[in-house]
Length: 184
Image (cartoon, rainbow, N blue to C red; front, side, top):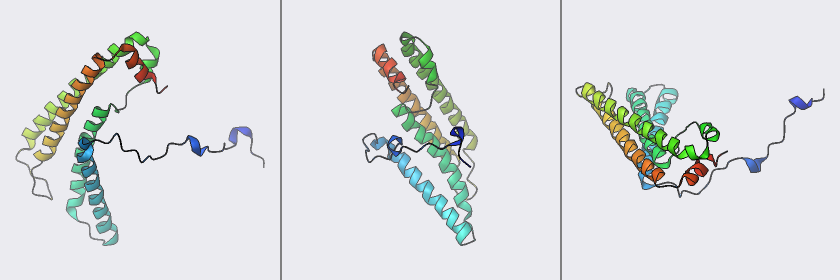
């Protein structure tokens, strides 16, 4: 049976695929905590896997620590995303507004996200107060440690958002429009 055109598989052009790069120029010393947390998380999950499926005797603390490290990694990693301006956003809106409206729209979006991160930090403070006397189940550490890290990450995101707003304000509107539309 011969393949019809609508079911044929086109050749894969490997030259068009993204490849891993050895260029680490965008990695900053500020990214070191994220890398350390990620490596520790990998080691804990590997330990969990090894003890559960190889030794058939799981260590109880690995699941709880992996859960809390994943929470911390999400927030600390978000600081890096805010610093680099690489959080996801709805880019298509920039395509449909006049070029002169892109800069005010970008500044407005940064202001809204800054308030959002600030509110998350405030909620983190509330969680610190609620969990101040509680210990983790399998490790004798206070649960508030997690919320202190979340709160600190939210404060850092607010500070980077303020920096992004100042940069946007001091950047020419045409350059902002070009940067927002260059992916299309």
